[in-house]
Image (cartoon, rainbow, N blue to C red; front, side):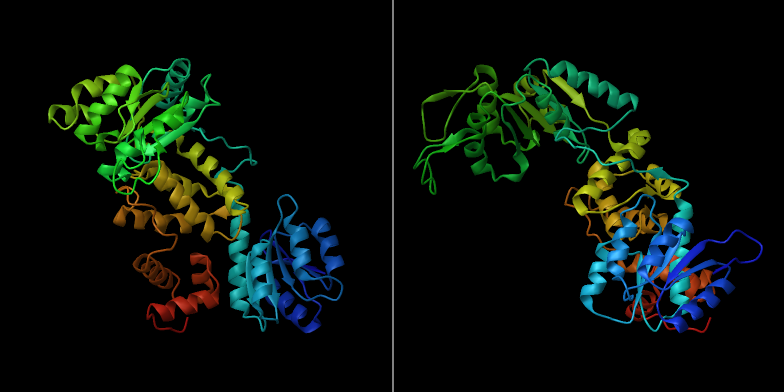
Length: 462
């Protein structure tokens, strides 16, 4: 049985429920709202109509006479361009809820059904279906390499050329760039494209190790060389052998240790702490820094001779704000990785959301971009990341600037003040019509009620 709303081509909704009274109620209500309704009373009929009726949204009861709703959900979501599935059930057990969301349910609504909640969920699902026609589409998953660098701008093409040249020799390289720009990826690309790609690649953050222990980390120590040296330990230069050692944050190395590093670069020899025996190493040195080493030389905080030894060849990695044309490519790449690593099925990012990301200055660079996309993917229930998810994350990033300060990633939660303001704004804009507010915010009615209570927002009649 099919009903079409007047005056426009309505979105088609398939309702699957074996209770006649519930089925009739939903059919009448949603038909009056202008939806094209198709009904099924069991799982077999649902799967048949899935092919014949091609619905955009399915409202699916968990308990059916012939099949389990979760099994039907898995069957549906396994198909290409699968419709959004809203699960309804009279059974409020945790296990069913977890399984439903795990296997891709768009929303989970308990019985007795609040029709306003259901309508808001259907509207959100339909809007997401429409969004699929625009914005950035995420291609199929592929293999990822340790040295993947994404970019097509002029600046990045020049870097790719330089990597190609440097991978053919073993000169020392200095990589400069802000925190989060991908300096280590550039170092890895040089190593893994070289004839020594099967040798070790060892990265050490010179700024993350206490001064007194950095020499031991780099060059190793003999047993008894200092308190706590209970056994001989090989350093990074010895372990790297014929491979590559990346000295990240090279500007943090103290002056005394700079002298010993200079000796290694000149002679390819070093001594373990507590030993007078010289050890030879063919390790290639790549240094990276987010500081201005030339300025540090003028200030007497970095050895001039060491600077020139490190700066035989140099690569300057531009900040993300200077290559915004690469952002769509980077976003797609990160989302492919998130689909794999988080078990997500993100297919697209809304056009408005992508434009917002391109316009943002990204002080934390790619690291900040990846963090925000990770948070957005965690929030997203369907296959499209919406601007309503991206916007508050970027707004909070502008305020806190956590990633830009290099203090780690921002937590994956929407900030309290931002969320409260967003809810109040949606309530005012939609004249306190809770169904419309839920649609605007992309959340269910129970979630809205909970958050209004949490933030002390009093209810009003719409």
